[in-house]
Length: 426
Image (cartoon, rainbow, N blue to C red; front, side, top):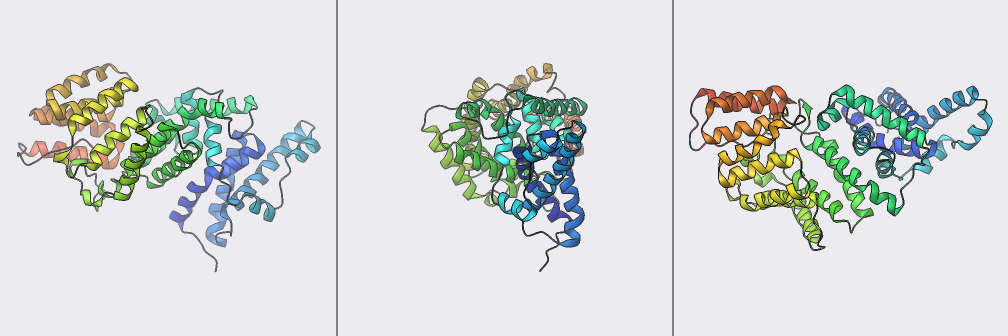
C-alpha cells in the first residue's frame, strides 16, 4: 500500500531527517555549504514527489541519495572547470540507489553534525548559530532573536561560519576525546537553545514548537549515552526533562498561555519528572556542580511542589544566587530578581532588576518589561504595571505571549485586583 504523507506529516518528517541527511552528505563530501544546498534541493524534490508517488521504503536513504546526486553534479561542474574531473569523481564515487539506501540505513549522523558545527576554527557564537541553523532547523530570524542581534548580523555570521569550515579542511568525523571536551560547551549551549525555542517559541502563533523540544531531548539522550559520566551533560538532560514535563499544562484549549502558578499540575508528566530527578541526584553525588545542574535543581524544586503556594522559594533563591556566581548572565539576574521578590517582597525584586536597564543587549527584551510589570503589580503600582505589560506585549513576537500580556494590562485597567487574583510572569 502506498503511503502519501499530508503536508504536516511531510514537514515533521523533513525536520527530523534534514540534519541526519546533512550530516551524512557532509561526512562523505566534506563541503558544508555545498552539502546544505544539495540537501535543500533533495527536500524540495521530496516535497514535490512524495505526496504524489508515496513515501519511499527508506525516506532517509532516498534523501541522502538525491542529495548525493546533486553533490556529484556540483563536483563534476567544479572538476570540469578545474580540469580535474576524473580524479575527483573517483574519490567521491557514490553507490547506486539501492546500495546507498542500505548503506545509510540506521546510521544517524546528527550527533556528528553537532560536533562538526562546533568547529575549532569558529568562535563560540558562530558555532552555536551554525548548529541552530543546520541541526535545529531554526530560521535566521529566530537565531538572531535568541542572540539579541539584528537578523542581518546573524545572516553574515552564519555565512562566514560556513566559509571558515570549508577553508579549514578539517574532516567531518567524531572528534577525539580532547577535541570533544573543547567543543562540548558549545554543543550543550546549542542543545539548550534548541530546547528553549521548542518550549517557548520566539515568535509566531504557537507558544511551543514540540518537534524542536523533542529533538533536543533526543539529542540530549544520545549525548548522555556518549558521555555518561559528564555532570553537565546529565544536568542539561535533566533540565530539559523537568521543564518539558509541564508541557501539557502550559496552554489551554485555545492555545492561550497558562502561567506556572495556574497550571493543572495533574497534567505534568510524572515519568519525565522522575527521570529528571534521578539524573540530577546521580550527577550531584559526583561532586562538581555546573550551571545546567543548578538550573535543573531549580526546575526540580518547582516540579516537586504539590502546588504553587507550596513552592520552596527560599531554596530557589539560594540556587539562583549560586547560579549567578557559577555562570552570570542577564537571564540569571532576571530570574534571581523574581525569586528575591517572592521571598523578600516586590520592592527587593525591582531593585535587583535595575542593573539590567544598562545592559544594551537585554534592556529592550520583552521579558524584562514583563517581570517589571508583574512586580509593580505586586507592589500595587497599577498604572506603571499596565505600562510595562503593554511594552512587553509590543516587544514580543510570540502571539500567545502578546495575548497574555495584553490580557494582564486589560485586567488591571478594568479595576483593582482582588486579593484572590494572582498573576505570574509567562
